[in-house]
Image (cartoon, rainbow, N blue to C red):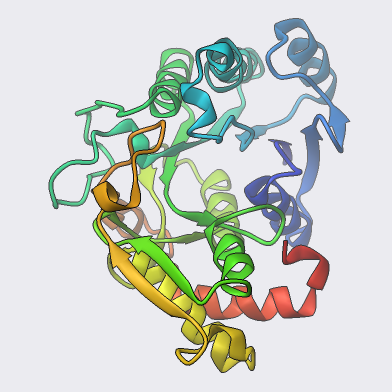
Length: 304
């Protein structure tokens, strides 16, 4: 089996490549910074490279993920090209090569309202922002061209190779004695190290369809996530994060202030389809956070 992975300089693409290598599965990676230098928005480039590589599976991790910047009108043509056009280019080639495709999507394809977890096969799409709209349209491109696909929706992603909420909290927590974090947006974190294992399990199977994948351990707010980050970091010996030096204050989204892009209040994802199809769920998010913080301590250059 040969796997072609996009976005290998990002959090997830990096870990997918690591997992493939661990299993001795032939892997080829692309990005604008490393691996095969490939502009996924250029159909001819995609056709030339994939016709030469002839992968059995395409794992599409690359995306425009700057949610607020996607709202700027001057960026939207580029956002569309990256999240929709590039996905169509890859899906066309997957069809031509009779390859499987794994497409990473997001809870942002839904409207983020209510309290019920979103089912993997729910089709009540109503993106709140331009980023979510383009990720939904990317899903549609995969469904349009392919039958052998995995659409995997994730949320609150963190990994060693990139920026994320945890790294932001650790950075600002060192220099402030009071932080406010929203307490009315609810979801579950996703550790890319754990997710990569699941994705490789999937691509080795033929259990195609839409799935939701976050770590286990229940649903929490961003405030509760931040509280656990600081508690675990303090337990590892950094006194800057303990309650004597840092106060964490919960606020509503309205109190925190309006961002350019609307955020979902309900990012709860129902992951029962994973178990129903024989896939091993991701570990508890608290355990994932503990392993992640330990990994950051071992790799100081990855902390920021």
